[in-house]
Image (cartoon, one colour):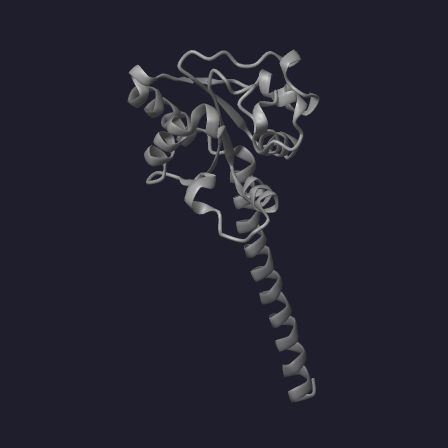
Length: 189
């Protein structure tokens, strides 16, 4: 099963990078990015939350104007109706790994610059992605993504597999008991 990646980005800050990242990752992973994948007529926020719930990791692309490139030019911390704010806050709330992808030397925002529910973003281990070394930087990200399929997902898959075996053993035991009862009834022992 492919790693499910959610790309969070600001249209006014990093749309070009987001498209390049998606194009490079889409053949290797199950990638969600709002462009081209959101069905028409659905509640956008509900759809985003569903995709975040199902993702294994979020890439939060952060460019030089990430803090202020929100809806209507408002600062991120002043805009709880900002889609990027909602995406990242939802992922953090659901304990999803959120990887800040810092574009062209952008610094990760200081906690004081972020609303309370985004402050944990400032403590996440980030990766740099630069125009001049894009392919090498992205290949480094791909290697790290491949090597760290979330432990909780591996454990969950093992539990599901174990659950199937448990159900099969239970069903076989019940059939065995039912068979013995039927044979005893049939032959009157």
